[in-house]
Amino acid sequence: MSDLSSPIPARADVWASTILLLVFGCSLAVLVQAGLAGNPALVLVSGGALAAALVVLASADWLDPLAALPFVLPLPALAGTGTLRVTPAILLTGVIVAAWLLRESRSRRLIPRGSIPVAPIATFLCAAFLSSIFARHHASAVREFTNIALLLGLLVAATAYAVERPLRVRSMVLTVSAVSAVSGLAAVLQMFGLLAGEFPFNDTGWNRATLGFGWPNELGTFFAVSIPVCGHACVAARRGLPRFLAATGMCVSVLGLIATFSRGSWIALMAGSLILLLAGEHRFLIRIWTVAVVLLLMSDAILGGAILGRIADTAADPLVGQRAALMMVALLVFRENPIIGIGPGGFAESLDSFGPQVGWLFNYVGTAHNAYLDIAAEMGLIGLISFLVFIASVGRILLRGARRATAETGIALEERSIRRALLWSFGTVCMVSFTVWPFAHGVGQLVMLIAALGIASEQSESLPSNARQ
Image (cartoon, rainbow, N blue to C red; front, side, top):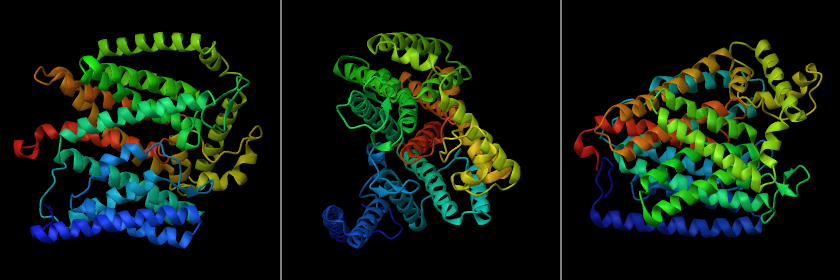
């Protein structure tokens, strides 16, 4: 039954849902045919009808688009160019946010938000908007501001949905771990050439896995953020076949991370685990590092020394120097626009004018390979400070939940495992942001989902018992 403010009679409820499902099915069929036929006008019309049907179905609680989100994260873009990519993840994000706004606008119930950091979220969004107004490249600014707004909207919407049904936190965490395992298998197949790859790894005949993300580092970030929740799946599945499948999924996800040969993601996963020290999880941290060393040595032996060789080549790798050069460019952009920056998305557009000032730069890639410097260059001090406050606010909530789960004896092992896994994932996000932009399509949605589940798991304790259904 619908939860909207004007209850729909049962018979009308059935007819409305049936009609919307028919519209959804017909629009999907037409969209596929139009895409195969290369008819852009029909693609837009059918895609719009499909999205509208999904929004209405989701806003009436006849459909749960949030449950489908993890499955579309690794999928390739449906269309786009080098700077504009239309992915299933961003489309579903738009549906989730629009459905939530529609439902909230018509609902009389008050969803308890408790510890959602509304002020930091709003401040960061306002900083991005202010920078967009004065941006040098307005098209890029509009695109990036829209991405930021959708991701922040997803954080709030996903938190609200998870707070309403706390059991959704467990199911979503397990879903993410399952998607990570399947993606890990596909990544290994791509590394060995059984699936097409575009990034050959040295002279080994292997590929650096990318899947639908398009770049190895983005896929590496996806695995680095997912692996901690895969570890929770092993704890949740106590024995028998579920435990075997969870352990297998964990191993396959680690192999997927290795298949990206993304050193930044490898380091971020381990460095991010250090945040568990603040939660009092010293013994668990020792187990993590012990298992990591064993897996590293075993994998390196199987791959003929490729992993340790990759790490050893870091200092001599010319691309490492190019990343340092790109960071220097970001500092130059920031120095010229220290308050509000050059505008969201402006770093890539301005690289041709600022890049020649760094003499050794020759790899003109449209990112500084450092999220903090990217934001400083594009949104200035206002954007950087608001972003750091936003990250710190979310991290504080997740840390508080993990510390409480560690200190209190009445909290079940599974709940404790969820909270430390989400905290570890978020710590990994903070660390990997020093080497990549973690809010690309697919990865950004995963980051916001992890943050939302962590906030919801902490907030659910304060809800009345009738809200925990």
